[in-house]
Figure 1 (cartoon, rainbow, N blue to C red):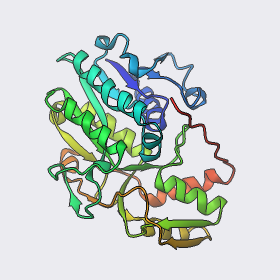
Figure 2 (figure 1 turned 90 degrees about the horizontal axis):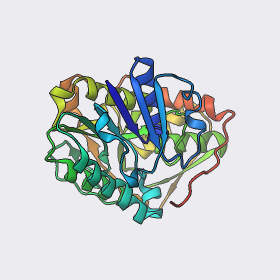
Figure 3 (figure 1 turned 30 degrees about the vertical axis):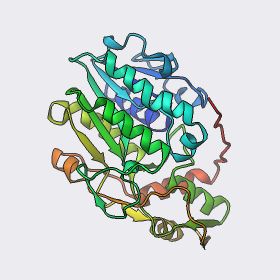
Figure 4 (figure 1 turned 180 degrees about the vertical axis):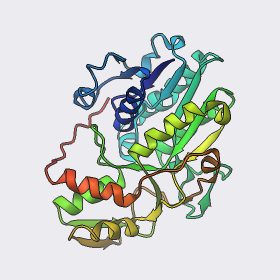
Length: 304
């Protein structure tokens, strides 16, 4: 079986590629390496890994050669998409349109989507809830789902907000950011502290991708929220979980957050299929505290 991971040098991609290699699969990692090569150097000598430097905006070279395509490449998150709306449209939407055109009936496509498209209702949401994508990121990911919705050989996974250690860290993700500020700055400023989000550890996210591949016949043609019912928390609840382990101050700001998301997500559909996250938010907080004891974040973000 030949497997392609687009965005394989990204936050989730590096973890997914490592796990696939550990399980003995032949993997091709495709990425434009806009954040550098260091995140995958520990994998580069593995003989079962092929690494291709390529921009997804130019299509996927030799796409029909792969049995399974994990499509993770994209401009991820509210800040990045807001800063680069044109690139977000080209990469998150138009590149998916090209993949949809080139996809063969016998291939498996597992598409990375997001629970962010549930918006700001504050109400419990499942896969049948009308979406309300309030950010450009959520809008592009919803558009990608719409492009793929009539493909019977596609699974779209709407991931919760990911957290935890990866060799390509993302600091725009709430838990990662909050723990860093608690450890390094000794203060967290909360905007809309009541706002609820749902979370999943990056290791569990990678496990969910592999679960979808191994159970593709069961899941194909569907959209699934990817996370756990025990992982819905408000910003304030996350901050308080961190404060049980780190001494810092919490400031509640009256300024409204530009990121308007506020929702509770139901994960019954994927749990009934057999997937449930193994790690808690507390597990992620513990590992991040250890890492941030020496780790200093330097922003590598750039306009593309």
